[in-house]
Image 1: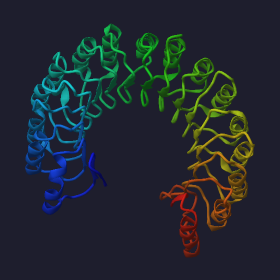
Image 2: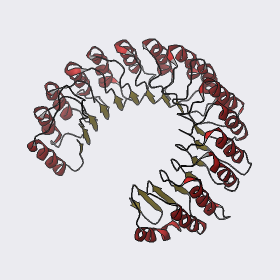
Image 3: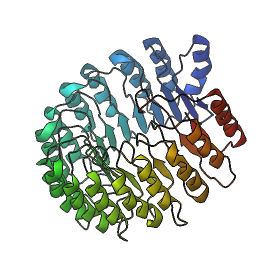
Image 4: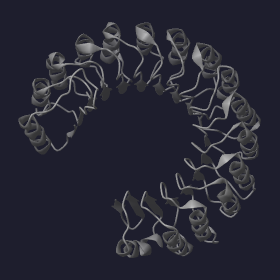
Length: 469
């Protein structure tokens, strides 16, 4: 819980009547009110409504993960319908709002010209509810800039109303419709709306939406025409190598300034990776890339690593978890870790790197010029035999701050070597993670009582270090 005169931030707390009576005066004066998963009831919503009516300072209201229902949401919204209300951000995510409740929400949007962000994910709005919502969004008094509609049971039928909103709102900046079955037809309608819109879109999130390779031609045009676009999330869609070939010309367009590209689990192989590498070489603006869950193999790893050594590639975060890499590609990654001056985070978990591969990585990390700050090596078939290399690297490396070794076959002997390095003043590691999920290793590991004691003592001796086990 965070509490000060400007902010009331409470999470996962069942609020007793006495505690609620203590909080009510703060609801009347705080600029930020967050009551996340606090078991709020309809009766509590009436209190919230009354408090908000007399709070002219309110800028953000977050009631996420409370079973408010349509009646409770209606009650809260009544508290916002005052001339003095200047709210900018409203989150009703996972609040059991239905399509029937969207009529009231739509009417409220017409009275809140200061509202910029609306989060409605994880509510069963359906196409009918979305239609009602868009009627409010189209009102000239509504100046919303960011809308989140993830897991809202939308279909392609919702995309024309959304496209109409995009055409009508020049200030619109962010749209999230991930995890809705809008499919190829719906994505095409959205892209047409964006093409016709003067809005300076900054983020478009369409993960797990049924986007196809054919849609990538439409998306190519959006990426090329919207110089403002900074984030594109297309994970868990069947784009394939054909889709990447269609999308990359847009990413290569001179006006494209994309910073973040999420294309995890998109059916991309080394071939599609080759097309993407052309983008990485040409676009210094691209900083974050997720290719997790694609069958890139060691050939894809080689192509990526060669590109990461090119001067035009300035990627800072690379996620290649579950990409079918083996120890054979680790010499390439080792060169990247030794020579690249931009890559700060490497998520390479759930690849069969084994001890030989990890030792190769350590050679790169141990070089004086290494700048990597976060390394994820969970589920990589690492055993105690590579811990001496890791331990030496932790002393030689002065950039690494977080290391994840979860679900590897590490016992007391291996962890002890790491602990001895971490406890040294010269080791700058701030977080060590070694969580073991059931079945995540060839055999189950149980730390001895002595080892647990030593780890607890380590955290006391070195307050800057966080150990997660």
